[in-house]
Length: 410
Image: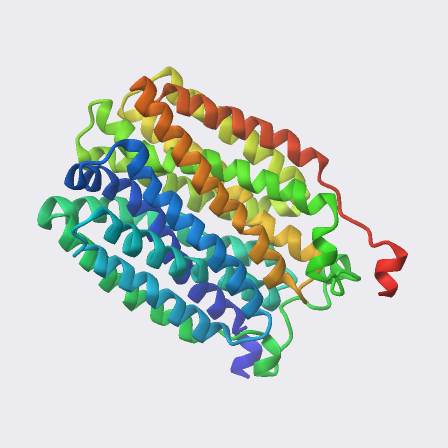
């Protein structure tokens, strides 16, 4: 009776939310640690940003590896033991004395661990939900903005109170404790004698015929690569903002604790955006049209801080940017599942997720280089705005692919 009243898939969603919060912890804390690491190790903005870029290169390999494993192995242990490497990386970073040691711990180890914390929950949730899949993924991926809401002020307070080394130790402890939520994850509803939520609904009918797509077949169609480019460019914009917004706010005259509120408001806006776009707008608009709206207005929000810079404009920008950024993120795994089915979704999303890692190389490095050359954030913000506007119009080209007869027979 209890099973009939409560669907265990929602436990998977909550566990996924906590795990993706750890991914957000890695993402958001970097912008806070960056100026302190630059000062401690005597680094330029470009070199300092390269820690983040190398982390994301390692995460790209981890994405592909984890994506292939999730199709055939237990997600609980993959996530838990993969994430432990990230926790250990934070811990050892506190004791790094040279730049190469910091590259090894803060970039390589944390990067490999981080790759297991996003793709595995999203893939598993896609298997547990047919109806309300976008909402379930939206709730889980809201872990990133919720993490930003908490991690930015928390990390700032820890560093100001205890120093950045001790702060890294505390982050490692928190990381390990939250990682235990991975043990609640089940690969598929069939393991518990259940069916996916809404398996016989209209949403299931829309997915009919998509389940037999292999990863190779998905990669052979232009729709996959159009989405990949949109994902890549979208995260270029996002990462330029996340990596530099704290420093930008401090240089605008805000104290560190007040400046931490600007990226934290991205988290606030993202919470509302996940609910509004994934839970409401998907009832009225296609996922692809939601992509266009979110990218277009994400770009428009950046114009606000190109025009006016004060505490209110920064906080308002953070809210609006987070609102629209959070709308497009959960749409991609939802669209991939609908276009190509769930059989090889881990492998497909593993390759797709490398778009984030490539963006993490290009976005922070290009913006850091522009900052070193011009001593101003304006050019980097213009690049971020242009990338987001371009992405909005790329999404208009995305169409649901149709299998060729030869592929279907194969």
